[in-house]
Image (cartoon, rainbow, N blue to C red):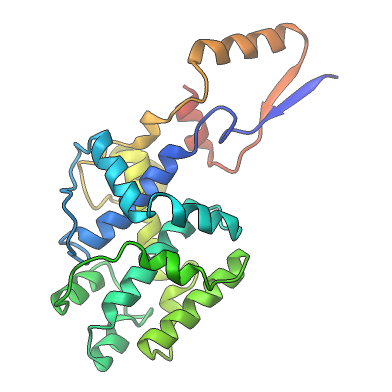
Length: 250
């Protein structure tokens, strides 16, 4: 039996759109009045242009230096990448809070979707130092587990926190960041169907419908047709969830 097993990202589809969505998610968490309400000159609605998207990504990932830095440390999940970057900005901003308020608002057990909005009320300096994550991550060790451990150490040292579980993988903050990413990527309807959650906004159309093919569609179809005609069995193996594979293929 002759068979060919295909991956999806980097084979059929570019990963660039997922990195765009990661950057957009960080920017929304930083700038939206529903979250930290910091100074970013982009208004989030359903009409982000490609220029807006490129600008956001350049800023958030520091011309992709941060993105490449995290990849080099072995972090490949978009959810984890955006969480690490946003967490470093959040830690920087939380230094403005009084210690007692800091302990309360950054307590993982008390954290809700309103917490970032509460933090924003006490911020006097709302400027964003986009290069900060690059400088902080430069001291992190290789590997996903080590990166998360180092993030907690950084939070403890910067904020004098005893409880740093808010900055753990799968924490309430991590889940909020992941959900916002999924809203942007899937769009309102698919998000509600797949995640079984009510979306926080109604203007997100879904970047899943704007995936970037690595070759023209006709060339890919011809390749698959020719391989099939030559007797090859064809299959796809990917870390993507089923819907996030099927929809772009359609």
